Image (cartoon, rainbow, N blue to C red; front, side, top):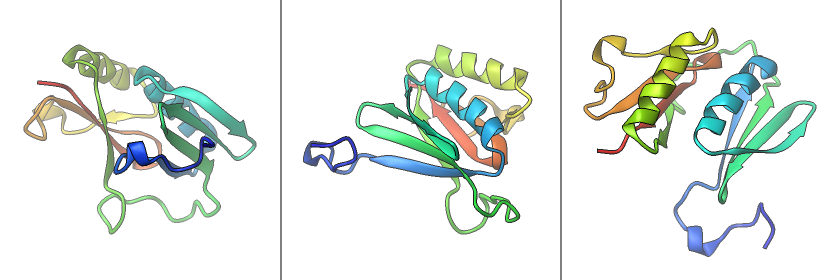
Length: 137
């Protein structure tokens, strides 16, 4: 079975996610950092994109063909991407790192880390794509 084939043992789990970036270089830096922190490894790279994988799941980032229509998570479509954290300490460390970055912002800071009613980081990265990192109990 090839790496892009379906796997019946993974039924219902996410196979891959593909994101379009208005500024590929800035987005590659952010996604490369946060995905590496979550255990993803670089998979492929080409002129207009790249990908990272963890187990049977992978994430693709590619240059948007039309960047004059900005992403808006409040309209129909994707609202955010949520990942499991390995620990609450990881949530805290990622939060501190997001605060240091120029390409990301901590969301709901006044309610952090319980903005959703559970322990998590909510942030926006390049193109205002919202990312959630959920800590265990």
